[in-house]
Structures are given as C-alpha cells and as structure tokens.
Amino acid sequence: MSRPLARPRRRSRVAVASLVAGLTVLALAGCAQNSTKPVTDYKGEPKGVEAPASSAGGAPFSVWLKGGDQFTVTLYGSSTCPPVATRFKLTGHNKVELTVPKPGSKGKVCTMDYVPHTTVFATPNTIDRHSDVAVTGQGLTWTLRGMSSK
Image (cartoon, rainbow, N blue to C red; front, top):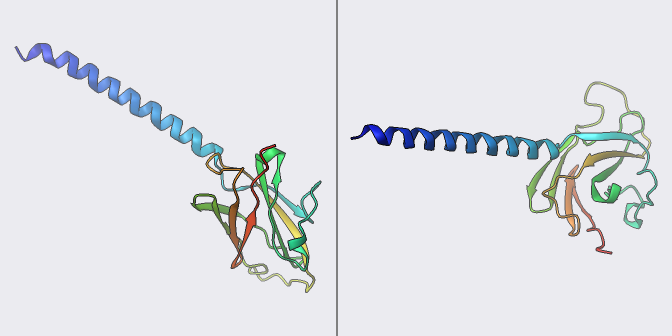
C-alpha cells in the first residue's frame, strides 16, 4: 500500500526543485541589474549637469543621470592620479559605501593639482530614487538628494 504514495512524493520533489531553480534564476537576474562596478569614468564634473554649490572648494558630490537610472560620484584630486570610485556596496537603506583606491598607490608620481573626476554607476533597483541617499567615500559622507516626484 505504500507504493501509491511514492508517485505523489516524486512529483512534489520535482515541483519543489523546479520552483527553487526558477527562484535562483530570478535572484541571479536581479543581481545582474545591481552591478556595483562603474559604467564609465572621466575627467571633470558630470556632463550636462551643474555642480551643486556644496562642491565649491572640492567637496565630493553625486547627482542623478538618465532619470535616475544612473548616479555619479565626483571626487577631487590629482589630475595624473585621479580618485576613481571602483565599486560600491549598499550598507543599508539608501546608503552607499564607495571603494576608492588610494591615488598613486602603484608607485606613480602624482601632480599636486586638485581637479574633479567623475565615476558613473548604474542605480540598483533597491535604491529609492525619490529619497535621499547617503554616499560615503574617502572618509566623507555626502547626500545624493532624492529626485523630485514631478
């Protein structure tokens, strides 16, 4: 009599395995959209965007690009050894922590000028673009203001 129960259990195991496999694929697809590596970086301030008044004197800042699909990180430092954010991690709700290698750490001689360098990242879908985002890098924290709801 225990023979008839074997088929429903087998079907149940197959269904559970299929569900787990499907959820794994969805989770991996979500991770792909939340890449923490830069899209690009370049000398100067963000293209097509006016720097906030708070950046006067070389304070780092961030702005939204492409309707919030991307955000920038503008850091100031040597033009020959620019500070470049190489990745970030989410450390809480709307909290981003940047990885910024020390300029000149590869034995390169750096000039003593102080210019902006911008790194652009894709915005993870877990960040609320309409709320402020705390960005931390180089021992400083600044605010990426939430986008207006207009």
